[in-house]
Image (cartoon, rainbow, N blue to C red):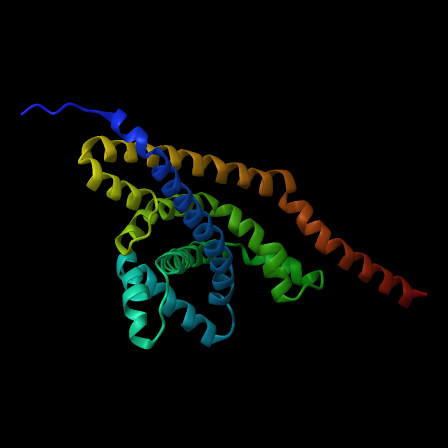
Length: 246
């Protein structure tokens, strides 16, 4: 049996693929940025002096890192209705991606914080910063920069994981391709094209996040960020000291 590749057949379904691509991008960006924001907050809580916070964060991370994302998605979409909570496929998909990414970002950023020299805390406290201020302004920026490459890799992995949500009927890129495949029976051409699209998205996301990293850490600079916080404190101390001497 001879099979002839006919990629031209897929052109008439280009609008469907573009719609799916838009949903994929929307889910990926939402999961990456909300997951990052929540992950950083969770990482800070996981190194807190409050034991309850540390325990809750550890349980959360262990659950989401040691269960398949597909199972998490199915629990949200098919399990919650048993409790009277019904989510649309798109909302369930968004929550699954955000919650999963949050757990991984928490652990990555936590590792960056724990690898920070304790001398930075001592230097910040000597300038009058509280431990919370030291963590926020002095420790956290270099900790995030230190682990930014693992964060980029996790973000790209999350983008690729959006294909999982097609299992609950979300018409993202893979879901749209499955629908087209059932109409055209040109699965080989379709999924080869889909693989190429995901490879391109991989490079695009890596490039975009790298540009973002350079804009934040290279142009802004950690030193200037520290100086903006520390300088007013030093000036205040000097003023107080001068007043006392007078």
